[in-house]
Length: 189
Image (tube, rainbow, N blue to C red; front, side, top):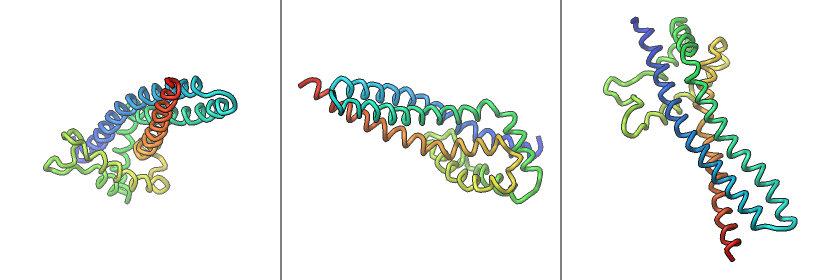
């Protein structure tokens, strides 16, 4: 294998490892958000009556859909990375071999330290945060040099949008959980 092929393979492996971990987490998040949001919604419908019940139904459906949809979208996006690994590898290999300015960014983004500090399989997995930060810088190249790299652009977009989708889902689920607890107390009284 040439040095360019090794670098391209390392880049694809790094992205797929992050995608695998993110997919596992987002699957659990999707299940948890669905249970919490649906449970809180049903408790609210049972505990409330009159006009406030109608308001709760509308708000519950809207925000529950946002929470569950965010988790589903995060899962679907990172799952699409694993489905398109051969195309992603081809795009990375061609981007590296082009020799343009974007090649340097690809090399800097996916460079792994010789001491193993940049590997994704460590006990803390902290390098996923570093990769996400690097991907934000890498995402800025989308308009200048990555026009022909649709899979790579989609993978970078999936990884960089993942934290926002997860955060939104978690926050809304926490509100549903808190309100569900309040509704449960109201039903008990």
